[in-house]
Image 1 (spheres, rainbow, N blue to C red):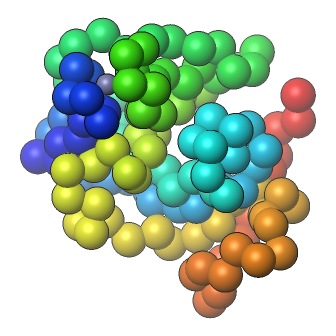
Image 2 (cartoon, protein in one colour; image 1 turned 45 degrees about the horizontal axis):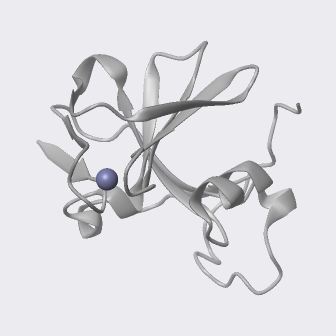
Length: 129
Ligand SMILES: [Zn+2]
């Protein structure tokens, strides 16, 4: 079981299956969503995810929604309407060292001073909106 929560603890999540993917995302939307230089996302099948507490839902594009804690603001999840998996911000994991990123996404938006995971494969953002 992998568990996570927001800063105030008002919203908690758990996943009963192992992560299906772990990657950094450098797109501008993830940057603004997290308020950080990039996001690190951990994906699970939606069917394996259980929420405790109610996250605030924000439609960040015509094809995806993101959630955060409405009280403390911690970014929590990203989900595409067309996909049956959901990603959580790695910073929300209780045990973030339990997962290891394997690639970069959205590298066209990578900041020149972001020096992390140099040897990992890179992908550009496919969808534009
Ligand atoms: Zn909170």
